Length: 412
Image (cartoon, rainbow, N blue to C red; front, side, top):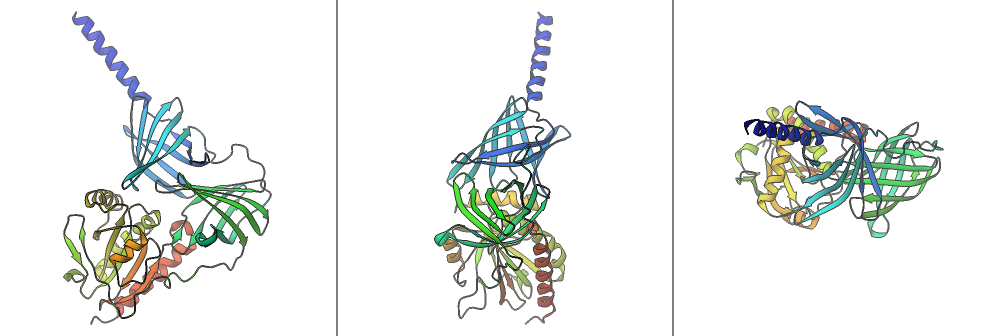
């Protein structure tokens, strides 16, 4: 009887080990594809690595490798929790393939997308693509959308062989790290970061014209786009889009931090300081790019007399839900400055109501620069992140020069 019990225990242990082994993903580069409601694939690549007894993956978009450490499995099920944006994958593993859903949690509802992935598949769009007929390297004046929804943007691309990287710059930020290919006279670009999933397709008519573009965003977003090559294309001044209403010189608010403690610009810690107010949301990829920069900026300038405050506008007015999402954000970036839960949503009309001294809020992020006297000196809309190359480094240089100039002014 004892031998049978021991044998049963050995068999159970072996089966358990097999079950655990089944949850392990093949290391190396995979090709993943999200499917929109219209049946269009949005592809991206990710790299699976073993880290001790755990696995983690890096989502690859051009030069960005977005680390995702929370990968778990049970039996043939695989669960991938994104470190930002309150989203996750719930998948089933069959051999070297995955299938299931990517789910975005949007305040009061969930939005799922079908997802499949194949191991040992380093290509993004095509295994064997037609040789490119054109090179799209350069600067393009692009229109995304039509009618009242038209958005004038600037596309900047670099093509090496068939591979293309780049982004679209807009007045409210950029489309982050796009990556894709030119096959024949067709252009394909995509990006996935856990918050946004983008796909751009179009026909390249000649060296100076892109037409018939389709833009897919998330589960249901669709639009059109076109572009003409223009090395002089530029956007409106980001400091010109939002301002204080006539008669106002200062910003005023009183919101709670993540512990529930009220914080105001009138607090002693902000007196005679240069203060940067960051309007953001944990759902916003451009805000994440700005936050990554702002954390290092704060390390550099806090001891010189600079304070930073983040004003968060979430998808919900529920304090506990917002607190959970923002705590995750604070931990991910090791944020040392206060993040405040405004209690207003990311609807731009609602955001503007929370700060009635502003003419409007055009987009996320918006950055408000306040001098030592407490007066608003500049308001910057959007953020050109590291995916924009020189625009990112130029912004940093300009922003830090402005900071140095304000610090050099005498306190009132």
